[in-house]
Image (cartoon, rainbow, N blue to C red; front, side, top):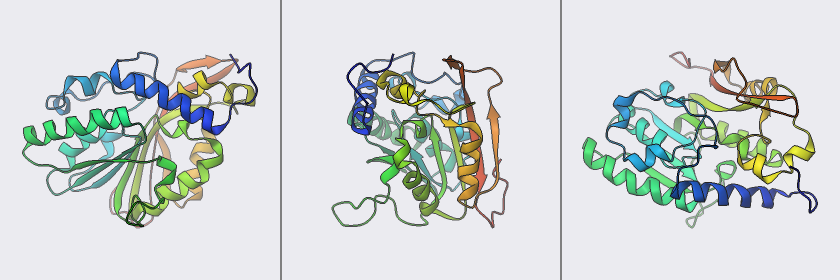
Length: 265
């Protein structure tokens, strides 16, 4: 399934992701990531089209606490962020970041509906690349300010970032967290490195496969940022997919920066 027209560049990968998720914002696609059951009590106030067009591989919202300021990387249709809005309550806040304008349109419309139904508004959805949270906006300030977030979560999106931008992504996650900040990252990992030929396949890349982190490397990269108690709170026993003998499975990584007064997991 590799490209017949030469190497696929990061720009090609980005275009493939944009096109696939833009279409998935308009019509449900069953092949994106792996379905996960969420507590139905949080879904009652969320428009059905948001729930139907949510694509993920875990439930990182389980690690959100009342009063948190939450950053949702790759917020997509907005389902995870709108669940978080209810959990953090009126004293908390939720920021979703996504680069796909179709998904942003869907999530922003839903945010107004949910705010009316729950009686308060505490969610904003920003346009941007999740690896570039330090990119300046029109006012010159970073998209997400230093030490402004209690919890960073993501649901099957980090694997869509080109490996050349991974360190920037990780550094930004660390930068935006307050002391004792936490992470809850659901994603797809693999049991051995993905060869270049698979990385160059736009369909596999946009399908949350060929950009997967190696399982141990994913843990090590967060440990290297200074997170403590880094572990997989969830790891699927059976692979989600096997491609050319490589096992791809869903995990949820959790960890906390030093000084946390509560358990990350």
